[in-house]
Length: 260
Image 1 (cartoon, rainbow, N blue to C red):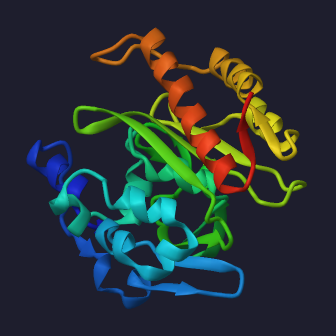
Image 2 (tube, one colour):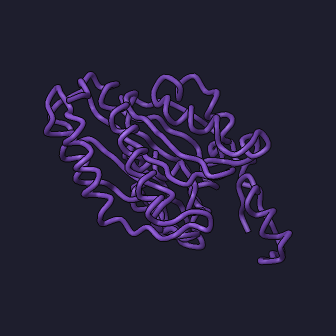
């Protein structure tokens, strides 16, 4: 059984939910722990820990939202051992990185004896604890297009985990499509097409009332159920607030005026 940081695997083994004859530590493979810049992409190896991402100067410069998020995940122990690839492949429903990476239009590269293939971050998670990765595949790296400094991630915690998380990327070019995604609510991260369309058509001024109406339209079709602590109605309300904050912050970072 190959494993990454082992933060989730250790809990599963302690609870005797799984049993394996062998464990293979993927962190010993240097290329899986590398961070590098190409002409068009920021490339992050799947075994890079959250703590390293939070401190890396290239990531701070290219995608500050990702560095900030990884610097606040869980606690220092998890950030020191937990990896970005392990977080993605475990697909825990309240995990934050899958939502932000979807908004960043990141590509995930998987490898097996059959070769290498690429899937989008937005389509990688199929549902709770389930991804499109085959059992014999290993996640190699994440490639994020450069030039996404305006991306923002906002979340609302419920205890030690995220109740709602929203990611928004608004490009500075008026004709480029923004990305707005919601996570930790439905079975997997979901795109918010009404919100994206309003931002794209807003020109240099993003009207707050129009933005809130678009968010409400996306929330209306959201598959949100009751949490163990709070109602679905409350989750929808929090989601609308978090989405607004992420979208407005990204729009302002892109040079738009946000207001009536």
